[in-house]
Length: 123
Image (cartoon, rainbow, N blue to C red; front, side):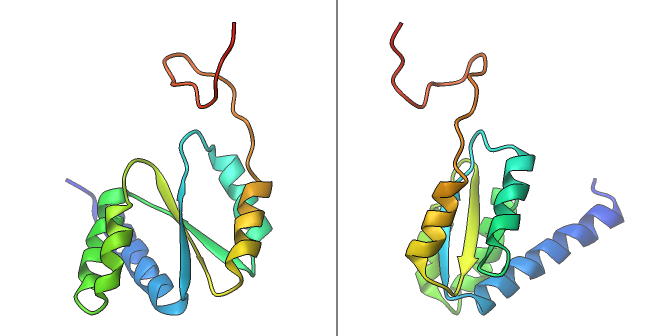
């Protein structure tokens, strides 16, 4: 069973996600497989003032979105996109500009044992 401190943190993060959906008009759903915490930190620093990156547990994000769907049914598509490792990038700015910022921070990751190759490999 979760401790009181952990439970309070979950409620705080849920409230933060609800606030982001109320504050921002546009969002990206970004796949974050093989993205390290340091790289995510660098992306957050680069986007500061333009966009907010929110990473959380998929089950918690789906629960919050399901609650918001009662008043905003268009969020069903966002909830259905919460598969595997995803992050939300909230913004009120220009979507092409934010997309370019995301792509600028894209880095190649080293191969790991048992991982599927993301690009074609020739031996």
